[in-house]
Length: 119
Image (tube, rainbow, N blue to C red):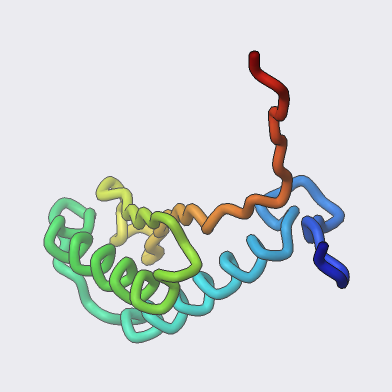
């Protein structure tokens, strides 16, 4: 009873996290927010204990990024986790690795209806 076209699943030509166009948008936006958040932290000083970043600084960096992403993307994601491994030796590497895991909103693109008669 409804006229018009209904666009279905927007599949991309791969099997990675980028297999759906909607996922591409979420990942790209989170990457932009991450860079914008951490660009202020480049070449900044952090407290170090035995070559490792202090737990206080790790909590600050994780919390800051989580807050920025949630503020900008709350309507696009279901959950977010930000993790900085405390065993990274920042003195040797001068590099900080951050792990982000985002659960995007789901889409009900396909529906199966079990329809039948009952006695």
